[in-house]
Length: 121
Length: 107
Image 1 (cartoon, rainbow over the protein chains, first blue to last red):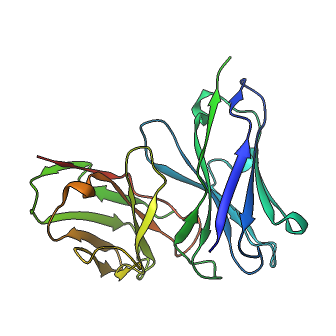
Image 2 (cartoon, rainbow over the protein chains, first blue to last red; image 1 turned 120 degrees about the horizontal axis):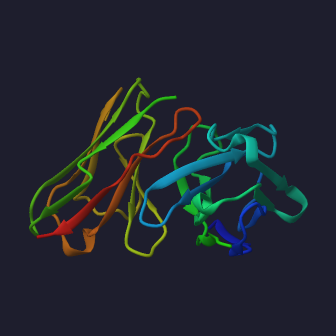
């Protein structure tokens, strides 16, 4: 059974870089798309982006693309998110997730526990 | 980008009621639509993929239907444990956008 465990700094100042890592247990990174999603306080879910470690295809939400980097570390079975120049609007719970089948067009079957990131001066 | 419209934003119904939530897209996504349930303080949970395929372990009172641009999630007999916010998501192509969510409460 795949398990995703994520971590990263929970408190940032404006203009700093948000950095989160998702560790994958119980399965390989290969073949699947690995995603990041966020949820602002009291609001809905926002798809951030995804990466496929084999094809190296990376897709970003256009609204975040200029500040966003998603990468993968296959040797450690991890993938990561970096978001630069954060503002209070980036305060959210961030989730990592994986699809149920090894294709791009997959629902998100497995989720990390979520990391609350607060941006405040 | 394809726009997603989910309605209603909230609803209140009695135990045993039939509840329907709708998700509409601005362009056809065939059946590449998922429904998620998020209970307060919890991680979203996949209920339905492929517009109508119930995930293993999900109670049969949940069902999904639709194709193209209009989709529905139905709870045939609302139970207290169904109190949650429900989200649709299109996953045919990026960005794999979520709907705005529907908060379901017990009257």
